[in-house]
Image 1 (spheres, helix red, strand yellow):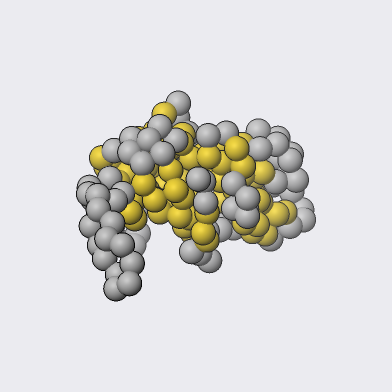
Image 2 (cartoon, rainbow, N blue to C red):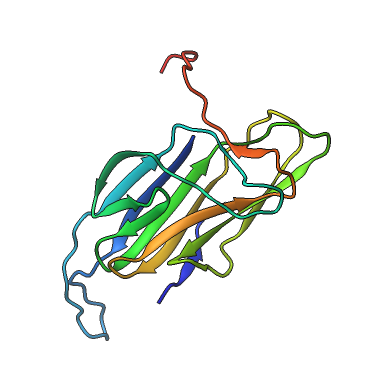
Length: 173
C-alpha cells in the first residue's frame, strides 16, 4: 500500500495528510464515509550533515520540531505517522559541495519502513564548491499508522553535505 506519486519538480521537511477518510459521493458510484482530521508536521535540523563517505547512503536527520500533530520524528530521522492516510511529504534541503575540483551528482530518495520507494530518486549536479542548491521535492504516500518515511542522499564525492546557514540578517528576516 506504499504508493508514490511525484508532484515535483538546514533540511526542512513538511508532512500533511491529503486524505484520512471522509464522506463524499460521486454520481454513479457508492458513497464513502469516514472522517478527516488535520495531521501535520514541520521538522528541521540546525546542523551540517555531511555524507558518510563517497557513494554511501546517508539518512537526513531532524533535530527540531517546528509544529506537529499526529506526525513526529522518531530516532532522529524517521518521519512517523500516527494515523492511516494519504500524506503529502516534501522536503527542501540546502546542499553544497565543500571541496573538490569537478562537478558531482547528489542523488536523493525516500524509504518507507526501511524499504526504498520505487521511482522516488532525484539527482542534482553540484557544479562548484560552496554553491548552494536548494531542491524542493514533494511526494504522496499511502501510509498506515506507525509507518515512517526517511530521506537519504549519496554522492560519488565525500565532500557533499546538507548545509545549515545561521546568523543571517540580510535581507531582513
